[in-house]
Amino acid sequence: MESSKIQRALLSVSDKTGLVDFAQGLAAAGVELYSTGGTRRALQDAGLAVRDVAEYTGSPEMMDGRVKTLHPKVHGGILCRHDHSGDQKSLADHHIARFELVVVNLYPFSQTVAKPETTFAEAIEQIDIGGPSMVRSAAKNHKYVTVASSPAQYPAILEAVQQQGCTSLEQRTKLAAAAFAHTADYDAAIAGYFAGQLEEMGDFTSTVRLTLHRELPLRYGENPHQCAALYKSADAGPHSVVNAEQLNGKELSYNNLLDLDAALGVARSLPQPGVAVLKHNNPCGAASGATLGSAMEKAWAGDPVSAFGSILGFNVPVDAAAAECLAEPGKFVEAIIAPDYTPEALEILTTKPKWKANVRLMKIGKIEPGTAALQLRAIDGGYLAQTADDLPDDENEWKVVTEAKPTDQQLADLRFAWAVCRHVKSNAIVLVKDQMLLGAGAGQMSRVDSVEISITKAGDRVSGSVLASDAFFPFDDSIHRASEAGITAIIQPGGSRNDEQVIAACNKHGLPMVFTGCRHFRH
Image (cartoon, rainbow, N blue to C red; front, side):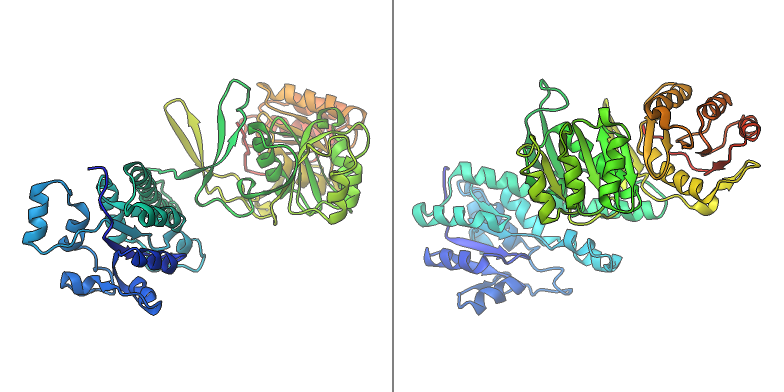
């Protein structure tokens, strides 16, 4: 059977957007309306004739509305096959009305649990039972039944009813697919909430379900021969890269998004006002200063060769001074992410540099902690899961383990270096002076090589800098090299079997060293 005339509709919705207009259009087309609870009252208040489902089934709503549509006279009317004689006989024998249209959306579970004050008991009451059952019944029987699970679908359905009296099988199939996706997302949100409760109790749930919606098709992936798209999590924070507003520039690429996310992560870690300069997912520059303009100058000067074609992250709104610095001849920026841009800065960045039309300017509104409580990473055949490494270290756990003690200035730079170091690929070494990243050694197989690269990057500025290492030094060779270069203080986790040897090397050279007791690998 290609189509069944829509004569009867069952409406039960939590989101009442567009409901009255839709129902009025259906009624004008001769469709009989059945409804429950708040939906029925909303329709009656609009002057529509609506039959109460409880009156139709002969079973009153009970248990504070927990039970109202779980009844054979409801699901029989939805699930019956219109061209099956046995099903039609059952309808007649049991006085069951046939529903050709089911309009249902679900309790606002995700919106409820997103509120910090929501209790576990309140969350449980927002788990819809009857709604998903009706949606799934209608979607299963889409050969005969039209299911509307979103207000956005109302206009197309109403147009079909008004013009043909029914929807097409193709339309019903698409609506069924959307309905199953809707209930799958809903169940995933509930499962995710319970998983979060288990994590708070110190456990990982046995199953992780991902609900991702395609946000943006991308031209290609890391390389032109790879296909790519951006998918957004249902619980993505409002001040994250995926929810950032693009104010200017070309379309975003796969690599842009990776670097923007990394730049935002570094910027969050810096004292305000701060700037992070990213290249290939590693900071090549980072600085804080008395003004944003001075921080921008220092961040770029950290490694100006690498900074060309970089991605920038700011932890305060971009002002005119920072924009003027970026607009200087010889500088080129791919993208910037910041809480906001002053009108003057926006004018400068979009009119002065040669790259003005192309630079991607992303606005996130606020700098807030990341929302990725659980990080997933794909490997062949599966995923690795871990909690995010985004919590500040407890400085009460830091210990000065050498005879020499860091000065206040050295301690401020060590703190800055330690904040940057966790964002550099392991093995990670960073050199800092005056709240400015001078050189980074990233992603090397040998920590000695990372030390050497950071010293080379810093050049003749290395004297007087401090050094941070994301993990312990297994030997004292890097300490001797650091002292030889003019490095004046070191911060590292400690925990090597050769810690005493490393401490002795620092004492020999008069270098203060701090053990944090916390490692920050970034693979």
